[in-house]
Image: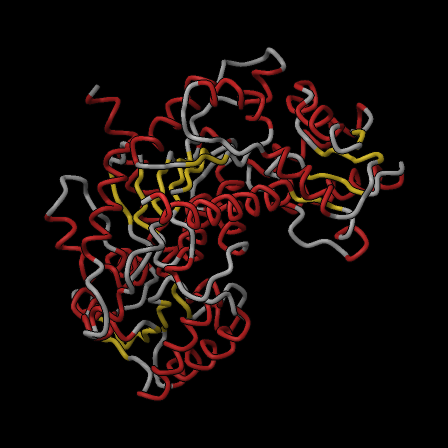
Length: 237
Length: 237
């Protein structure tokens, strides 16, 4: 049973769950992946913690993970990019495999036929500071480009707008920053914060071909992993 | 912590989670209601069981409820109308209060200023056969009207289309049946299957004023109950 360590934020978790369902080949309820979601909205802000401006979210994330384990989860996904700063710490405390959202994005990029080059990142300041993307994408020949300081401030403000439910206002800001990264030579721009695709859910064709949705990439990785589990488990039983 | 006994179907559960988030007054992640979701897609079909055409879903629903209890849920919601046929049986097996989706709809209707009269039901054959709505709505002076047999067959086919991801095809059918019920004198038509608002997510103004979304009503009832819990708990501690 897939366990989703969510609530970071709650709307992004709902978006992930919908994308997980849509990524599953299914004709009826029973074809879908049994899933447990812990939308632990009370987890302290991840970006603030990385920037040294807020409490450590790790204890609350560990508590949410323990709830998922108690309920019977066998594999974990975390639909929050910034939270992956604590991926290794969380993985060290559990035997359940935890998927990595940046690996899912890297697989997506590698599968798209692009042979390296600059990739744009729309992300929180915490995700950028933690360097979550550059190292893992470098393995596939990609370099990372983020907005200039003013642009990055705008991205952070837009993410907060999504968390406050002001999705249309956020979309205008994020679209402009995505276009700027594309104009700077990025053939792909990763929505590397799970609030961002909530705002940018409808894009014109030009931009749609450029954007990579980390939430969707993680959902697809979950479907692949859980279907592989389903194939393996009967052989073990 | 709110526990959601879901997966009936999975897309309806994702829709419920998004509506729960939107129904919560919040400016940041931490203002939201901590929520556990068990999307137990493997629960046997509820409508088939009521119609004597399939296995009993109660054991699988009880197992999902046990997972939510193990993970620390303190209050339960079930975003599936037909599953409420087993509401009393589930409630008898747990000390956690289980909200009732039809009571949430009745509160909604009563709060809308309507003083009784006929209300249309778009629902599964199981929900109609089980009589989930008529008794509880009668307490508020409402009578229930469902489509004629051909119309009802169309509604059931549309629900299956949603479960198979064919949302646009389902919308056309459901809209026609809703209009027929309105034309037959129903001042409100309840989307009394949680797959239906997934299909009818955008309605023209005429129909939007008529439709009542049971998923949204349940989400609002959850927010009210959980906020009341939050007020009471500190006094107890």
